[in-house]
Length: 418
Image (cartoon, rainbow, N blue to C red; front, side, top):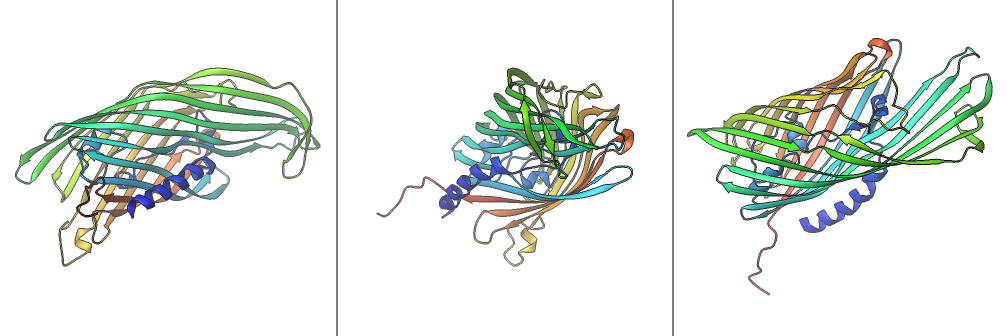
């Protein structure tokens, strides 16, 4: 039964992931957009912490985790979020729903394999600067699209408590932007349309370690490195003149010949390491840090290529953990629930008007076992803030509800009866 469910959802995700607008953040104006993937729901509820090897969950960010799987695992997750975008003198609220990831993990003895699809980053903004002064040109910009990743990886259990892994990721997507410049008293303006088709390959490797310190106390360690990668951008651009209506719908009257160009964007290498202590299937507390060099994602056809923007080093710091009252309780369902919590502080590396754009969030969650199976449903809550209202910028106050499914079954069993 689970196999039929997986096939059906994979087909659905293949269509929906390309059509959805995954963000409404003005900061998706820059680079390749707003990075959406924060990990599977069970890890996201712990602030992104992923240091423990698990037999029924796997961590997409560290391919060494694939080796610890004991059952075929299908992982799927989505998020509903509401965001209040606040400037100094006004605010607005936006709701959205996104499908965040789809992945399948297969145990193969000492090996483990995983593959899946991640809608990685999204562009989705509408920004306008309108002046009543007829001598000042007004502007309205919007953008959509993003970057997706398809990955395939293997993990290997070197010895009990030590595993390594690697995966390959194919990046693809399309970003479309347009901007209209006009004088409000005259219904005539100019429009620039841009599109960038993105593609590229990158590699990721990882290691996970577990050691017993005492009878009921374990140490967990995790490290992964994503190699720097080139993303090829096939650009198209065209400038037109025409009329616009009260809703800024633009009707083209005349256009200059379109132009095409190809550029290479650079995604720097990323190093993540973490450690924790805990009792297996009882409790865990740990911390994790991620560091990445300054991005080189400015594109000649991207309107974000402006002098007031600087790309600096990226860093993320996480603390989190979980608690299970009694994982094998027969008398109480609530004793088997996994209670999770965490905190995340993220330096995006984006600096605008000399202001750092940082993201801070508190996370909570719970894992609900599905009776009679090893599968579970994972719920996560995230309350956070991104950006600042200083220097004419905006602050995003957001609340996200994430729902993930980890469905487990044993595949490739020999039938005993025909």
